[in-house]
Length: 471
Image (cartoon, rainbow, N blue to C red; front, side, top):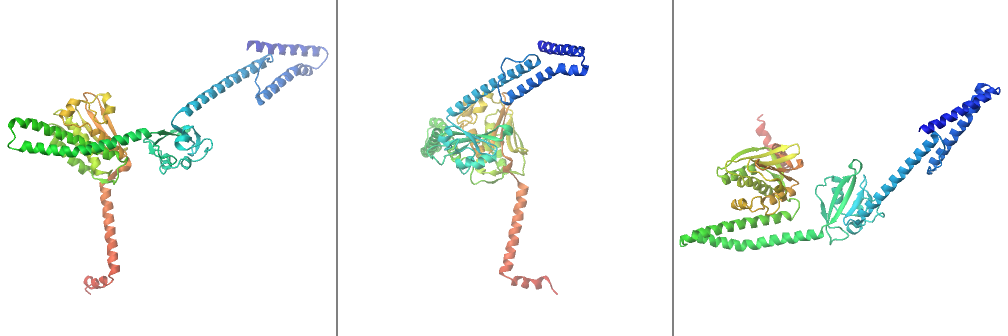
């Protein structure tokens, strides 16, 4: 930079000396200065014109560069161009690696623009979703990959659960479709289609096996239990045989509970959403469940109950009763005597919440993610002593999933545990509003019935008139 400034200063000095010589030859100072500075003006104009032409034609600026400040300017622009070319090459290499990686993914990947039209798709989408890119570029996904629930699923914006489907072009496979927002302001969508055929069939086999085995075991177990009860109640049974018979009865009852829970799980797994839903009087159900919990506790626990008597729920009463009772009974079974158990049913800004909290021993963090697995027990010995089957929270998880709800568990060792069932706001019902609506409908039906009676029997009004008007 200093050499460039010195170079420019030298040119000015030379121009000044030239102007002095011209003045010495008798020219006016202004004319002499203008003539002396003309070469500098021409030089600057030429360098500026050349630079503009090179940039406009997108030519690379390479040496030799002009002297002075213009040389520094040319050199700086050349270095900027070189950095830009390196950056573009790096981006191009990254884009190619990303494209190669996306093309090698076995799952179908589809990028949708903000209008939910196809922008890009990898080769796996051709096999799994019958989507050919770039042939289908710009088409709506629901037009190329037809499914009755797909368009609503993408537009709804609720992507917590995947959409499982058998594609129309190949009914022999089962796809799990997930959607993730991305891009500027999360307006674009990335659709991921995964082949879950093997997992789906394995789940079907497992579910059918459990259901059939449980059903087949129930009949012989009923026979065994009946004979055990007969032998235990018989006066001819020796006294030394009664203890073994009682132990056999207890184990048979435990086995019956396991089979019943397995059958319940199988029924819940048959459908993802609850059918025949209706308004559920949750406060009434909880009163019965709390009464059963008192009987199960036999006075060993302290209960604190807080139930919103006007808050009802849209769902299936038998399933919700099973979920709520499992959570409360677990608190009774797995907390020591003298523990306090709090039960609440309330409306929150995020929807209805059923919560059971205790001050027992608590649960270690490594056990919490596995609590809803089948037959998983934190303390196996204590669970068997309390008569647990290890299936209660698995049933709770499936019931809540069928009601678009979720289970939240918070616990620390030595500080108790809290189990919360969070329901969607749309599932909440108000008992007072329901009663007012029912009365309004009843009055409307009564009015319609009265009008119908008058239309079918017009003489009724004429006969009734003298009774209401004695004059």
